[in-house]
Length: 231
Image (cartoon, rainbow, N blue to C red; front, side, top):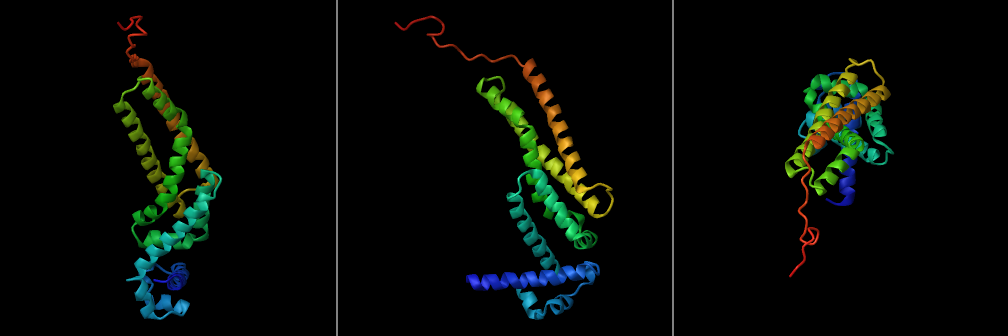
């Protein structure tokens, strides 16, 4: 496909998505027809099926496209807090559409679409607040105070925390969309940071206790350090 054809195809998809979003603000997804979508943007019905197999495929493409755009914006954000607030701003601007999606599709669908944005921010928080612990782990590895198994376990723990908090905050975003949380995005971001920081501070304390209880493994001295000389 040439660049011009690809550009035209993408523009057509965006027109269809814009028409769909207008309809999603008015009625449940299962009541929206392809005919209504194409009439809303002046595109032939056959053109719709050239790009999408059904309405749900268009919904999937619409969110993927807009989440990709949000990720690009996130790359220019100065900190992880701004990335999360950008996501909440998107949801606020498209609240009726997101609510329609939650009520029409499985809730896991919308969570999965927001997951990448949230995961990047959560990973950034964990790396930031756990930096001293991860550095200490590397130093202890070099000094032979920790074995490879313990290092691997702590790395797995970091990945576990990333996954756990990503899914937890995806659930909070869902509750916020449904109006079940009487909190501002700024408050959610603040509590999110505080919760992860407290978790990692506790992990650091446990790590230090384990390190203090573990006997130091001393490196063997060379024959020169032992005072012997070569003959």
